[in-house]
Image (cartoon, rainbow, N blue to C red):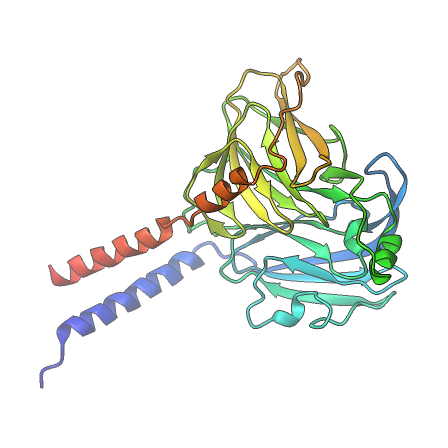
Length: 352
């Protein structure tokens, strides 16, 4: 019986393709390990203008941002200098065959006071926008959260041009009550009170300024790091082009505002295509009868005009717009189409 040459040719082509991709990915040798040392301490913070005892990482509130590349290994040594056990969870990271690093009570033992734990996490086959947060004892109500950005490897195409800048937005509700008092409320069977305000990157009204150049496009990674409420994000006079949701590229639909529910992370592209001045960046609560709002400033370079006009209103109790947003978010098939085109090209090559 004569062996099938077609099958051999297909197998050979696949082997050559895998070899080529392996060689291509090895051209730029990079250190696959990123080592971080974090010291978790108490510290005074004033997010809503009132002194509170916050939980800081390396003296920062919010905590330091993690930048990684697909398949990197993150080695994070966390020292707990609090007076109570502490854990960090990595929201959205997959932890394949490594679930005991997820930082949730039950899969992880808490870090005792005065001790440390080294997390070993591989961001296997992941890209996109995420955040970390403390998972014990209502510590999240005192801080210790921060952004995670996982960049694509240089050889992997991204379905949009490289932006001029990359900005992380950690937004959410905030309480003036100490996290221990909030914890006792829950332990005694009570609900949490209504939040006292909203924060953007740890600050209240107009507490942050983000500078952009007219005509350039910027990527904003928006995460809801709050405790109880959904939020709506919008920028005065600017559109938001959605490009990624928690590690998956999406169809690039454009929105005037975006609902971001608890724990969610979105990436949008914003083009600075308006006259040179300052604009409100707004976050407000969703589906609450009492509306909380906070702002930051989108500052155009060389602008001499501050923010003006009323703060752009957002949807409040309106459900239809939120349902529309959910129904219009779709995965991008660019990568799948690229693979199909490559496969067709190989087949044409083999049988021509």
